[in-house]
Image: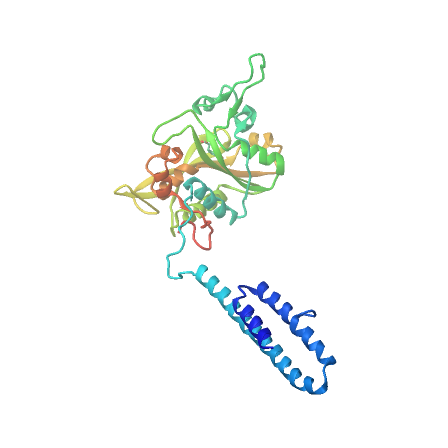
Length: 357
Ligand code: DAH
């Protein structure tokens, strides 16, 4: 009995994990365990022998059971302690670095413009950057001989030598998306069309690729008054000021009649632009009432419908709002510039939380 006791208490003591401990338990107390077999032998003993051996075996069994459960607890504790050691976390450390990437100001401003117009029930339409000259020019009432074609410094995409169809063009403005939208949705309609456009031009305020946003609203009784209200709402919200003054200057575009260029009142303090006050005027967009011929080209009856349109440079309004002096830097992919002017990746502009924060 004493030998059995020593053997198992020692085995329990050195068991290194729960599996080893279970093996000891089976060897002692399992169906064919040594202690169990001894207990079975009680039946063949004389009553006197049994009276001594019975309680002793029971005590041994209980001692082994409690030694096993004590050891089990100790093993569990040490597992937990190991985990606590390895999973230790210093909650006073500063939080993880922000993602290295930033949102490009053009993407940011595009999102800002979209959210402002979405709030006035405009949806977003897009068109291809490689256009036919019909969508880019003819449908917008700019025929072949028209000076606007030459003025736009168009990039032509020439076809193979013996293909004499007219070349495609890199769209010179977002206005062709007006025609595509009219074809797709008919009237009434209210859309803005942001995207890249191309002209052969390069200096501090011009790059061969830049961005515009087109606006188009067609209904039965829209007028210049509606245009003016929409643009005022837009400018106030975009520049985050309470009041703006817009100036409509008579102008000429082939696709609108009448046409107006729109300026906003502003001041320049040490090169710092302030919108809504001052004695300067800043031109920000072209606009007008959609020309009947343009409605017709889009498959809309100009006797039943009328509307307004406008076109604005996204890069230009981005430069103005965020104080970027040179347009070319937008497209240089200079990491230092991107980190300086970029926006944090997780803040989406929206009207309720604030556009630019
Ligand atoms: N497409 C013109 C440009 O690129 C801008 C423009 C002016 C668009 C007047 C319009 C508009 O829709 O009505 O210069």
